[in-house]
Length: 183
Image (cartoon, rainbow, N blue to C red; front, top):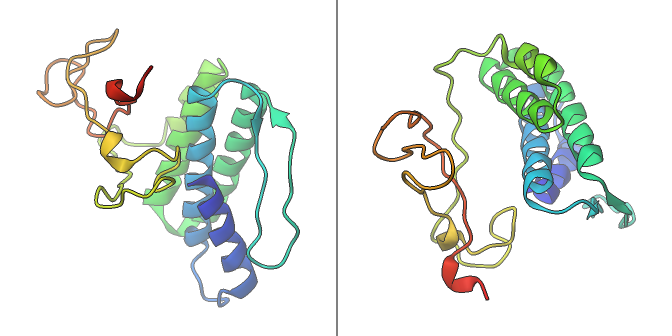
């Protein structure tokens, strides 16, 4: 998801009409920011953020970044997305929620609260994945889409994601590796 968002943003910058809404780029920056947050949360420190251009620029290999560096990059993308999304409240809120999450991950709790202060509590944005695609790399972790599962009343917090029990107002998926794949 990160590379696709980056490359699409690159193509929009190179080839889009001047009438293309800025919120399109903001949306892509928010997607790229969320993919960095997910990587920072799920992968050990030392994450490379190499880029592959579709406009003829050379492939750029990077060193591995610390978790905090990856989150700082995500925060910068969300900041840019907030500015670019001026014509779309929905995308601005998405970027603000992403920034808040990244700030929570680095322990900047007061800043996280300020980042999401404007976002209504009823705001929802759902990331959708095509479950009919079974090609590796069809989602941002390269896992086969059928391995994404919504869990109910599992884990440390016991949130009821499906049955609506206390804490169960979250309507998005929680991702887990398929236990059959471990070993």
